[in-house]
Amino acid sequence: MSKQIQDAYVVAATRTPVGKNRGALRYARPDDMLAHVLRAAVEQVPSLDPALIGDVIVGCAIPEAEQGMNIARIGVLLAGLPDSVTGMTINRFCSSGLQAVAMAADRIRLGEADVMIGAGTETMSMMPQMMGNKISANPALFAKQENIAIGYGMGLTAERVAAKWKVSREDQDAFALASHQKAVAAINTGKFTGEISPYSVRTHMPDGRNGAVKVSEKVMNADEGPRSDISAEALAKLRPVFAAGGSVTAGNASQMSDGAGAAVLVSERILKDFNLEPLARFVSYSVAGVPAEIMGIGPIEAIPKALKLAGINQDDLDWIELNEAFAAQALACTRTLGLDPGKVNPLGGAIALGHPLGATGAIRTATLMSAMQREKLRYGMISMCIGTGMGAAGIFERV
Image (cartoon, rainbow, N blue to C red; front, side, top):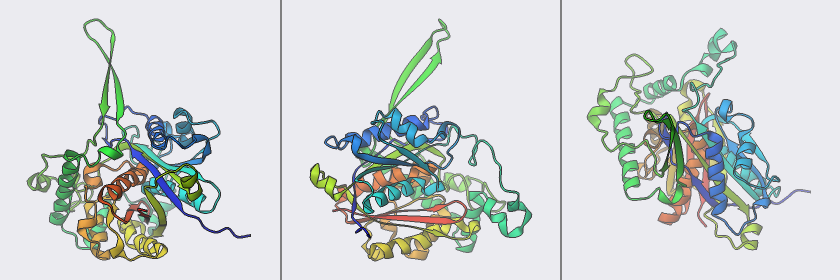
């Protein structure tokens, strides 16, 4: 007997501040950051019994070392949620956090759960390199020419996108500058305040005078990445990082970062039974594959699929969180799809705010939920490119 698809609603969403690589969160364990946002998200709906949570799905792009051991379940237990609440860790690289939210929504839409949490966590400070602790690529990547692009570094793919879509260095730097300017303005006007759950960072330092260990604690309540002192002149002086004579620099690429985010989703029955106010309805989600060597264009294929599933037009979108893996790919996607630049990353993007890989989708979900409520917008979308040649897009509706 077939089940009727039901709606899933976001009733809470929050995130940590995003720390720079080896910045304020360099010693913050990813499972502790996850536990923090899980607790904070659940506390936003105090009338809801946590024992009703059907599962906690957590995205993580490098699920090893401090991020191993099924970090989702570890985070659930550290958060003090009931033992009955389960956890599952998933990995779709950069879209892992958004994928977790979508999978949580799907369980509700299929009638298999009434309360779910979709989340993401990532510490890039604790990972020795982008590919994790032990690089063990399949030899076939290098044995056959047609497989080589699977192993391309992300920066090299951005260079290929810049060349193929004719995105100039000047345009990339201008885009990066605007990202920082928008993010700094958003911080100064408090637009991120409501979505952030401040995170306490404790450090232990030896006191040279008496040999004792001095413990200090600082509450982090704002993103570290955005810079008010950045300029077009400073960006123009940076050298290409990934290719001789290239155009992709450290200034027009996303920042390696640390952070976590979480969203609580429920069915319509739970909304009514607990008298909850939804932040948004989950509308659609899609993924699409593209050539690995130009992975940054993934949103070009994923966004139209998500719009078709949602039954809306691109012009219906009021706010677009387009992850800025690189200025080159963000510009290529925006121009090819004809996205309204005024609706794309109004508060800045990953070039300024940072990109903690598997956590980013969940973090940007919190940003989108906050923006849609604050600005009284109807439709919002989160989209990103994904390593090895994929793209993802998720659409939400304020109700």
